[in-house]
Amino acid sequence: MRKIPFRAPTDSSAQGRGGTDLRPVFSDEFLQDYRVDGLIYFTDGYGPFPNSAPGITTLWVLTEHWAFPCPWGSRALLRCP
Image (cartoon, rainbow, N blue to C red; front, side, top):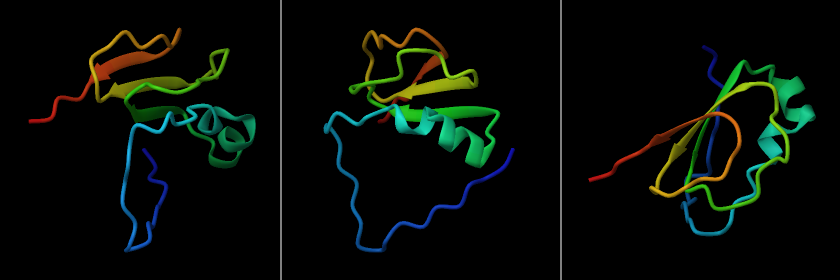
């Protein structure tokens, strides 16, 4: 496993419910730059995703229990207290 470092600005805040575009991380450019073997994507599942499977193992960790329509990958539900 390899970590990809991320530094968020100290004054940043996270907000949700914006219809995140799920496609950019599956782009050929991203996958070639980072040479990932798999991807774990934390999401509520609301937003557009690629029309075809990207060819890498994908785990969708969902924050809401609903019928996520993605035709590939595995799904897991993140339960928060």
